Amino acid sequence: MGGFDLDSFLNTYRRYFKLIRLDKPVGILLLMWPTLWALFIASQGFPDVGILIIFVLGVIFMRSAGCIVNDIIDMNFDKDVSRTKDRMLVNKRVSLQEAVILLVGFLAVSASLLFSLNSQTVGLALGALVLTLTYPFFKRFFLFPQAILGIAFGFGILMAFSEITGVIEPVAWTLFIANFFWAVAYDTVYALSDIEDDKRIGLKSSAITLGKNVRLGIYTFQSIFLLLMIAPVVVMKTGIVYGFFWFLAALYSYYLLKNLSLPAVSYQSLFQKNQRVGAILFLGIFLDFGIQF
Image 1: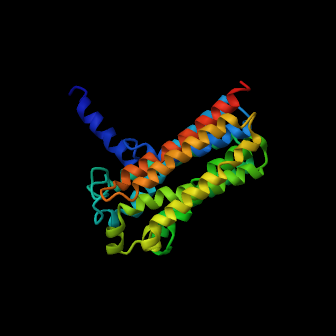
Image 2 (image 1 turned 180 degrees about the vertical axis):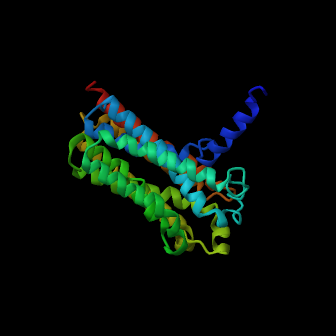
Image 3 (image 1 turned 60 degrees about the vertical axis):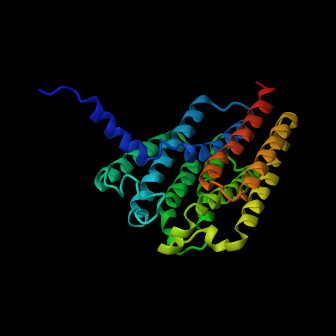
């Protein structure tokens, strides 16, 4: 009998980790922060631990499923894009069959989390699933596919309010719309990394559609996001702590947007750093409600 091959075991799972982007967790964080904003605001403080765990796991599992769906659908395009040509399905380090099995597994585990949630929240989760499964197709024909992503990335906000308060309150819709503009802003920055490859192979993106006005568009989207994110002040204990952190988030956004115009700018780096804006805002929400803990 052969011994256990640790290297082979690690290499196998390393391939899967790369497939679902666990080596690049920024996508999880961009989904996580808005969900956490909503959970704490809807709960007016620290949410129920069980609900918190369900939503955190749901974000991780659905983000992982989304990555697999995207790679399966875009497999024939990714090989012609410099940034994605080494993805696991393209270089055949993970087979299509393995990817499908993993996808079904993540969807099944995600579905199991829904059993303890109310029917309205489950319905919202199904809506998020539809957008997750169809989003990659929009890049073929829709001039602004980032808008679809912006909608998909906000469902955690609506689900949090639905589950905790039973009602999607006005502040929830404000957070949802704010997050929509934030997602369009950072994903347009992301799209700038691939703009030449996307033009060549015929894919659509907001970066291509906006053309020479792309930077103005990003500035506008990020500004609308920040203005709308003033709204949580109305449900805070004092609003002063959150207001201070909102100001820090605005300053950091200005820093990122200023770098967008540099000649040697790394669009991927700016995209990844944008999640810190969400983290700063969450810290403000957490500490402001912390007055009540």
